[in-house]
Image 1 (cartoon, helix red, strand yellow):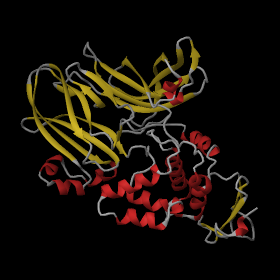
Image 2 (cartoon, rainbow, N blue to C red):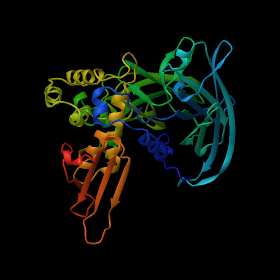
Image 3 (cartoon, rainbow, N blue to C red):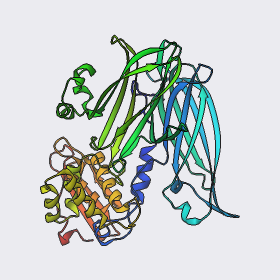
Image 4 (cartoon, helix red, strand yellow):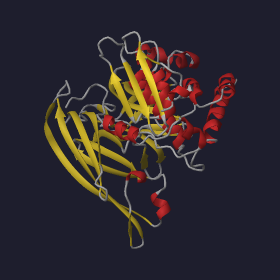
Length: 458
């Protein structure tokens, strides 16, 4: 098992191939179904969310806190006296790893059980999340944490893995890992963790919580910087960022730059920052938190990865303009033109949402299964069929996959002697077959007969 560093949160190893294969197996809608209103399969999403953070325990040693969040939809409820009940088990295995991510050995194995009880059947179908938290005492170092969730009734199990660097907390000034919160009740010190690290655009704000540990009272300066992950290489120093205008920071993909003076007492000092969601574009971000002395000496630094997603779009869509272009396989030209010509980003987003709301098979819920299915297909096409000159969704095979879903059978001939490589995709359920030929020998398969041509019928 290898875990990549220094990114301490997002090194996730997940059985994605098996999950995607299962999703493709059940992705039965073609273009006709997408337009006519037949039920679409739900796009891939994590079966449960996981977060692992390190902090100082009550006795001054180091500990890791393991947070899980599993939706009710991934639990099987049974009818019991007085309502419905689901049970599941969480098992966490903690491995020590070296600087190259190589496993050194298992140091902890803990299992805990959860009972979920609701009064009505409708509650079992609600978009509700069940959360658990466990704390483990560990020495400072590098770890890989593998967490398995097993449903008690169906015996289905899901596994996720995360890397973590546990810091020392016995220095002059140190800090815990940040924890993202959807809500924070400061009067009761009640935390509502955002375990998945997904900030939805319908949230006005979110909160970052962490602890500062000081051996004696001191004055500090804290700097918060949030930058798009793909722009980290363009980001100048924190001091340089503080001197830039808001527009210049936005050009650098850095919508948040904030510095504050702090007076901390000896011991544990809870710290929070409320962050407005509005300045953030949809995308993946890294939040950096730096603690410096009054003279500018760096004493502690930590990072947290998070993502901003449109409500209901899960993790499939990162760019609105591209998402609008990708509608061309099911949208009328005039609808796409109207979205592109909208004068503001807000108007584009309104038209885009209206397009999909009109096709929502389950109005009144936060999920739009048909939209998710469509962009799942786009995502898979990009992963499977991308070429140097084209994204996968913009290729012939990508188009057929997006319109019709997973073929019932593919007859592939990549190395036939005397003929160019070719594939035949069979859609028995639609009575169609499509021929692709690679004229260049470089994997650029082109459709031999157009989709609309009657000769594609079986």
